[in-house]
Amino acid sequence: MPTLAALEKIVREAGLIALNYFNNLKDVEVSKKSARDFVTEADVAVEAFLKQALTQQYPQYGFWGEESGQSENQSSRWIVDPIDGTHSFSKGQYYWALSVALEIEQELVMGAVYAPALDDYYTAEKGGGAWKNGHPIKVSPETRLADAMVCTGFACLRNYLTENNLERFARIAQNTTGQRRFGSAALDLCLVADGQVDAFWEQELNLYDIAAGALIAREAGASVTDFKGNEGVFPKQILVTNGRLLDQLLPLM
Image 1 (tube, rainbow, N blue to C red):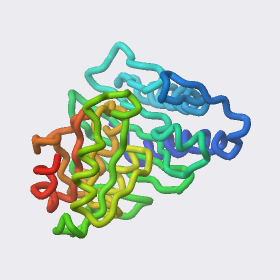
Image 2 (cartoon, rainbow, N blue to C red):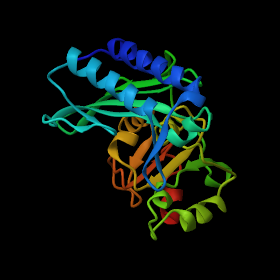
Image 3 (cartoon, rainbow, N blue to C red):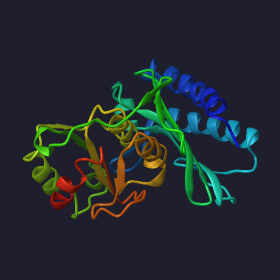
């Protein structure tokens, strides 16, 4: 079983690779996987490093990365998004992150989300709490939805889905004080964990977008459910709150 310190060393090294590309964006090749889904050579390079480092040091675990797909062994695996928020990354914005989670027999046991441009490193281990830059974090104490700040994303629009987030966003926006759209689901989940926002929801994501962040949020005291309040990590419908706002948000979902 890896330690958080050993994982941090690998993830921070991968972050330096990403940051080097980020600081030289004019030379970075950007292409499209689909009409609205971007990939850069940085995504590929960072994932290649993580795959090599993690599987060499921990050969007992499989690997699932956004860019390279799944290895044969998926019962216990690393789940990796090399750069969550690629479009933001390609525009020179700061809200993008590396996301690495360890899942053993369908249970998330360890996760790290690193935002190199912000130099914020979030991590958690099942049952061990959540941490940001070495300090423990917890969700906000906000109890009133009317006073809350929430964040969301629109992967559903990127995929041209007719069942999208627009009407849901409009309903929730009218019932909250602040709304944000940062562009990285992995980082959004950590912002809930850190109490910077009170709730996050999104639909039509993939497990590699949210695996690490969901564990970090849960370890910080967050509720992690689908849009009906069922507990669990559901990429197609994820709602993460400080727990105190869950019952007020569910009727609006």
